[in-house]
Image 1 (cartoon, helix red, strand yellow):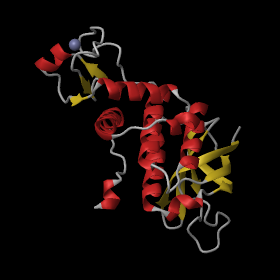
Image 2: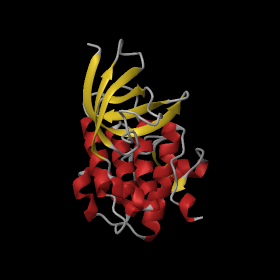
Image 3: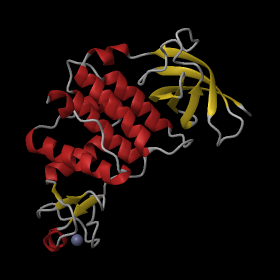
Image 4: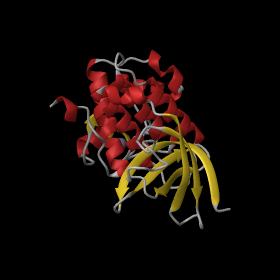
Length: 249
Ligand SMILES: [Zn+2]
């Protein structure tokens, strides 16, 4: 079946050759797919301005074999989420979200719950809200949806049952908590992660994206969770995400 039709979010749109673009789309039924938009960068093009990241599109793709790069024959914009581009902080948050999905997924591995989280995440980004928190909660969800849920019930080094009343650490490399004794011996990079921070991550993971606005994180919990999740994400995918500080400095 060489003809594929699907809806999806544009994760990335790259210049290719003199006039073309390669577009990466995340689809609820097909997962991450790529297609070439021939002539997309010419003045007159049937793709006219719909190939920007974050856009929700309906796509028709010709594909000779599942491995071959598809040719986009038609792409229609369902919504551009244009308000995302009106605020730099919101745009950074959206860029973080699509990059997380792009980095952590493999091609053609559909995950409808991750797709739903991405759509909900992009829709929740508004300048008058705490977009960095929304992005952090999305990050916790993305890790959970892809089987990289951090381990908190036992030490990731020795397997001892977690003892939240004792000081413990988080190891990005091991993907979970490290007990006090293993921490004393040293197991590579370790970050502090209090009982409150563990509870916040567990709560964020259990709530659906649409209920996450109820969660708040302040002060040291917020900082610990942000630092731990960023380091863990980097350990999993080996790539950094766009940072909010890039725009502030
Ligand atoms: Zn241990």
